[in-house]
Amino acid sequence: MSALTVSQDPEQSWDDLVRFWEEMEWPEGSKVEIIEAIITVSPAPVSRHNVITERIQRRLYTAIPDDWGVFQTLAIAVPSRLGMLIPDLVVARVPECAETETHIPAALAELVVEVTSKSNARHDRVSKPPAYATAGIPLYLLIDRWASNGPTATLYGEPKGDVYRPLSTATFGEAIRLPAPFDVVIDTGEFPVD
Image (cartoon, rainbow, N blue to C red; front, side, top):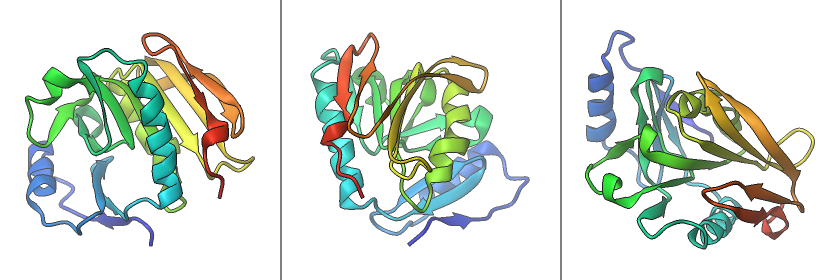
C-alpha cells in the first residue's frame, strides 16, 4: 500500500490544519503527517524498516544523556514549512517533550532519523530535509534503503536556512559516525537488506 494524501482547503490556516490533523479519526497503525501543507497517511512500516530503526535506537541509548529520549512516534511541528512530521526516530530532551499532548516544536530535536519506505522515499529525501533544516535540527540521518545505487546511510548537519550539508555517507555494510554530542558509530552491516 502506498501513501495517501488528504486534500484540504488551500486557504486553511496552520492552526486549522493542525486541529484537523489532531481531531480526525485516522486508520489505526498508520503514520499521519502534514508535509508541505498536505496531510499524508502512510501505512505502518514493514518489519525490516522497524529492525533498522530499533538497531539505531539501541545504539543511541548508549550515547545520550539521561534527560534525553529516543522517540519513535513523536510528531514535531515546523509551522514555517507547514509541516507536522513524524520521523522514524527523534532524539529530544525529555522534560520539554513531556509538556505537550500531541507534538513538540521541531527546534527541541537534537537528531531526526528517517528510514525510507518504498512508497514514500521521496518525502524523506526531498520534502522533509528542508523542514528539518529550517527548524535548526542539528543532525539528520537518512537511511535510504531504496537509493538508486544501493542502500546508503547519509548524515546531514550544519543547517543553514532550509539546506543541510552532507557530513558523511556509508553504503550498507559500512559504519557511519554521529559526531558530538552523540559520538557513536552506527554499523549499517547490522541492517537487513531487501
